Image (cartoon, rainbow over all chains, first blue to last red; front, side):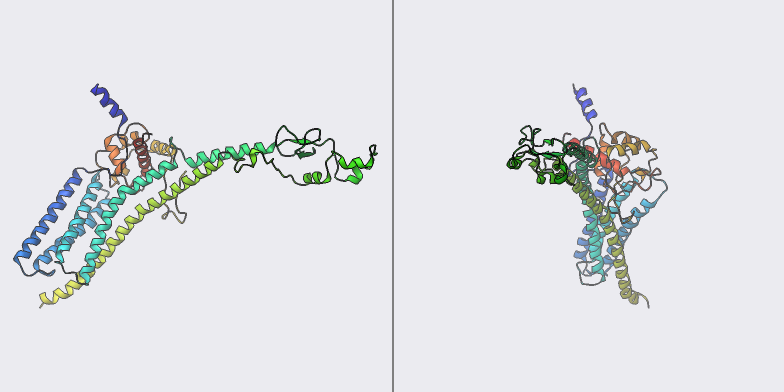
Length: 343
Length: 106
């Protein structure tokens, strides 16, 4: 029984895509331990140093040590991952993931050590600007990692809306259905198109004696060809009936005949189902709303993909800006330091 | 159908998802060179290209492939190194949709 259940589970495989999934592994654990050990040792030394020494300044011996270690960490974070990405030798699947984990580790440690390097001095000088750049850079990296988890899940939700259960394009399916509706309606309306040569007028029965009861859309031919030119069409006919009965003739009136000349207007009966809004296109409105929903989903997918792309570029731009601020700070510090060292 | 976002240029456009038949076509075209996995910053060593290809389209999804599919953040690093010009990110997106739907009981 247990074996059967196990086989069923194996056949079913992994299911679900939750928001808060955990994808940690051995490298992730090693990274966490390294961050805790590195940051813990740095903070412990800071506490020990502040209790033993009065020289609590960024340009103290401990301050320089923190600056050098923090800068090394930041440079490792920046260049190790970038070089690994561009490396084409001795590659193996998973190495880039390890490099990314160490990139995050070194970035966080660099921030911690350079923050300790400040010794609480946040004067508006080059060092503070560089520190602000490092904080922004690290925060953008942390936010980026959260976005990397959340945004693909959002994209998958939008793609789910844009695809059918079988994985086909919903836009094409809806378009085909709409095309079928258009064809159906055009065939339906073609039944009402007056045939050239035959004279039709709506609302009369075959005898021409009144309204047709068989249906609201029926159109029946007039009895015999009738010309619009009454002076020529009736000139050979003799009046066998009294002249006043001509006014109650059941033949088509000139006004009725003029409706057929040149154009045809379809006017359904007021009780007809065709007078209902959208009746000529049953189901079309639903398909149109489905189409709009899919288009909105695709627009959102596009927006989410731009977030992924441009957040990475934003992180790189911040890295370049921070590097420039650090160089500025190093030049500034060297201008202060070198006159005291050199004779 | 290859859908692109903006039409200003090739660099500014983003490629949207692909349909299942397109993904199937790309899977059949895959030569298994492993270049996409070598360029991926997410994949761990537990996933191989043949297992990934066999589980992408249909059937049960193993735990390493499921972890990889959830962790994939569609950066597109796998697209450029492919010698055949395939879009592994679109295949991974189909895997994500499959897992999403399986979680909803579809």
